[in-house]
Length: 491
Image (tube, rainbow, N blue to C red; front, side, top):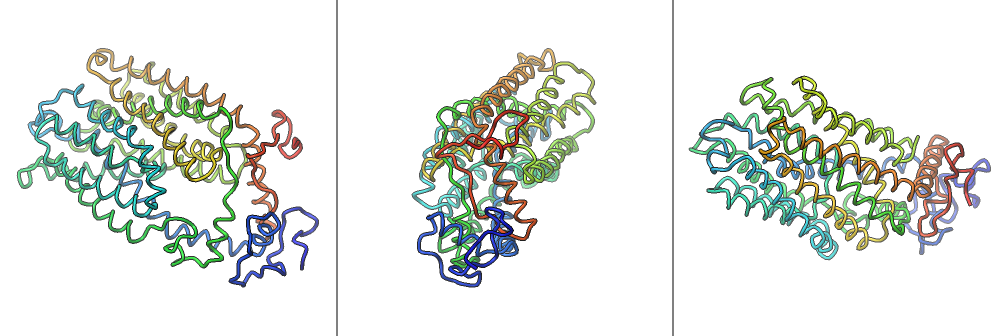
């Protein structure tokens, strides 16, 4: 059958066309041509599409999830370490003769280094290949982390945190894995607290040593398992050439808009300033609430992370159905974030503060599910994408430098309400930048939603959608106001 149109619907393709058989191992000569691309895509059935994606998920998602979870455990553990054996002789502040204000620099120094080396690391990733470069990142950060167990003074602590940021630069953050890392990290800190004094080492030193050794072993696994690109030789171990080509052809066209980048960066910077401030001070807040003594205070950090994981699962499923555009979905998230950050200023009861901790963390965390998908859809080419995402990450991580410094002792007199007031103000500014960025990208976002809906409909009809795709090289107008359908506003 030469005509790939089913029941007169454009883009609804039959499972097999004459020039490319579904069982054929031969690939079209030039899949980049529109006709060849469509013919190639329609040679796949929905069952084949699901099978390919299952192969990708089985091989990559678990490893990537473990990788990102480990990364975030390793950098977030400084906040948990601070309250291990708090008030006792083996607490990190006591052993290293550090004040709480000096300890805040432990996290700020890490982010300063991360900012400096993020762009060079991302650009080198292309030259070195993802597998080799990511393995290097994990191995070196594991070594540096393990060295934390031998810290003799605060100066060495700062130096190692700077090196940790340098070694980790280029490891783009995951989202659900980040929150799972909060659950696992809190459980680890709770369990390791019982090793306090073993072999003459304090519990906080055991945290760094054990997590560092585990990370070094993970580097070996990543080097042996992680592939590079859809068509790389290592990918061929699990996918046929035809399946590899399918994955690459399904990648959509992307390009930067003229001026949305600055507002994306302001958005991320402001949201991170508030969110990083809360995440850094969260273990201290939960400890000071007095709901649980040592070491069970670490377990109070689990509900905020668990709520975030559940919210992220819901957000992923909801966004996958393309009911609304991604920036539209961020609006209730920003509203919720603002409300619960303001609550830190308005309430005094311990229960209310803890509820604000749980829900404020949840809204902050779930925000980045739609945000990064939204941001990535406006980028073009691997080198350009690597540079722009790295540059944006640098700007966004400035929030990680400033956030911990908001919780200095001089703000303690009113329960850090001044600190949380600054965080809440930053969130509101980020929301305004979010709204403006939505306006700038509204046409592309309607286009993304339109194509997603067509693919969903085609799948329900037992076909693979292979017609028009998202275009931003030549931006088209799909948005004609809240009362108009995207499909009806095409120009």
